[in-house]
Amino acid sequence: MKIAVPDSAVEAILPAVADFLSAPKMVVGGQSCEALSGQTFAVYDPATGGEVAQVPAGGVEDVNAAVAAARTAFEGPWSNMSAMARQSLMLKLADLIEENGEDLAQIETLENGKNVMISRLIEVQSSAEYIRYMAGWATKIYGQTFDVSIAIPEGTKYQAQTRKEAVGVVAAVTPWNFPLNMAVWKIAPALAAGCTVVLKPAEETPLTSMYLAKLCLEAGFPEGTVNVITGTGSDVGAPLVAHPGVDKVTFTGSTATGKLIGIQAMKDMKPVTLELGGKAPMVMFDDMDLDLLGPAIGIGTMFNSGQTCTSGTRLYIQKGIYEKTLDIIAAIAGSLPIGSGMNPGNMINPLVSAKHQAHVKACISKAIEQGAKPILNGAAPNEGYYVAPQIFTETTQDMAIMQQEVFGPVISVTPFDDADEAMTLANDTIYGLGASIWTSDVNKVMRYVPKLKAGTVWVNAHNIPDQNMPFGGFKQSGVGREHGAGALENYLETKSVCVAYPA
Image (cartoon, rainbow, N blue to C red; front, side, top):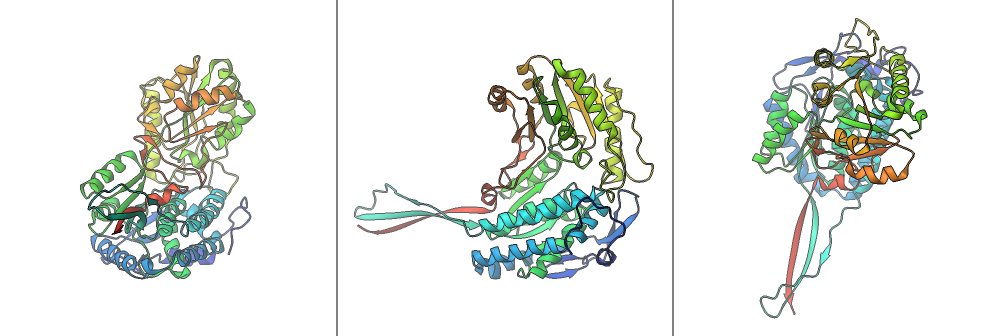
């Protein structure tokens, strides 16, 4: 079944979804399976706090089995498969994602809480498009030839070239904010490059990754090419990253966890890609088009209830428009409907878990304690893990709300006078993932885009990625880039070949 009309409400859970949720399985070596321990853990619906499913609680033995299966596939059928054949399987997977799109969208909203329209358009449709995009690169991996100046031994000439070869078995660890989409961001370029994958999804939201693994089997990928193990970070994530049979690690999540993963990867000299936290600034000059404030807030700051690593959490607004802009922003944020993601009319949905809800509430309380002024008084439903949008004024750069990642529907608004001062304020965090400038003056764009220390800088837009545009961070927002042709480089090794022959 393809996705329903994107903005249609979910009246009832589909029978196929209920059947899947009754006994979701891991996939190891081409087989749907329980954890070897037989243990499970619960996944909860953020809208109600009720249990959605019991999921296998994997452990070290499951990791060992999955890595062994991925190694067998890599050294066997997957490596022996032509690039065109890999591309065909990936295209089949994209088709299956669309065919099962409404199932996936409902499961995503059930486990994550997000608006079902986002589940349909981003988690499902964008994921299928991303796989098709990456599938095209499978047939376009190439090396180079070089002229060399080797003078010995006398009478010998040389031909030199490079080969691009798959790095091997990839450990992929994904976050809970865009579970299906993030899994695809890891799996698709790895498969296109010729690697095999062991995926560990976040324990809060493992279900769509498990469904994706099932679709990989249905598409006909060789056994062990894509493996999915569910469990905690300590029981599955840590042993997977440290496993000697893993050749490459890719992780999206918090900066704190990313640092630990990076240290472990370097102990084994494994290449690592880390897409980590953010504290994105939005710099609004007094010549900006105020009609853009709608998408600036709806997409730039409150999209996915603020649970986005590039979410615009710090707004710096030039004094000439500060008061008027603050009134508009407050009116927009304060009017966003709050409720279950199964109704696409609700623009603020529950946060992913009780633990994260408590974190966001604690950030709000600390901001007030440190002297920031909250200007909204919206109410959130008592059932589920909701937090109403909040805007803070009268902040200073040393406040936690200005320096630490909240990952919720919470923003700060600060006036500025001098543009260079605004750039200094915007860069004053440990993060550098995303940023934006809002102006109608192209001279300001050209002057100030280079001054912002961020992996992506939008102009008159914010929080909008594209599969062809490299994505990653400066500073403590990560290492490496995803998307585009360069994403394949994360999963390839460069081998120099030098052939000697008589002159």
